[in-house]
Image (cartoon, rainbow, N blue to C red; front, side, top):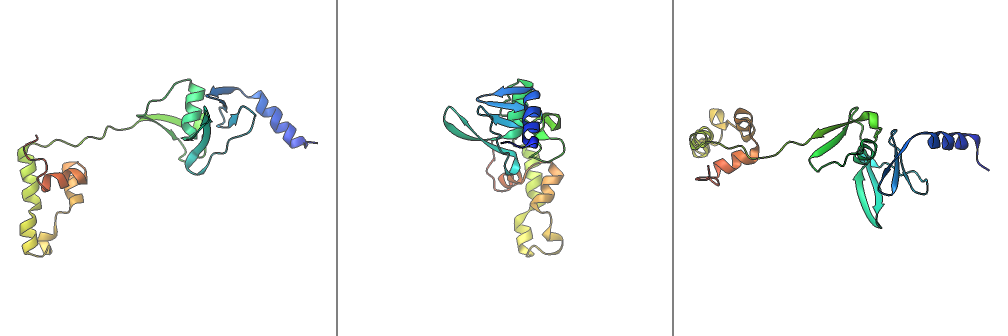
Length: 165
């Protein structure tokens, strides 16, 4: 009824160690099985659709494999990334754990903010139609110089943060 190759793969799958994750079984090779033995498909970008208590969830397969094999429940700030860069390769040996950076607005003193405003000096640049030496600096150049985000520069230049530092 079944071919020899199917029986060989089934036997090999039964020999490997499986770890439990919710109602699923997970192997170190990154294969996720439901309780009926059906293999879950890892979709584009490494996403897997699973059901927990009858509710459908899309989770990253790499997180499922890492949590199941390591036995550790990950926090929201912990990120699991494939070492080789392929999100569909979710074998445990190919996964590494990292923490996401805290994203906070950089704080500037009043003097630093005033220096950024004078350096940008929109009115003077507008008089000269933003040409020649008055074309610079751009938001991106200010971001690089002061090591902050575009939204921080925008907030400083539009006076939204005056008196808050």
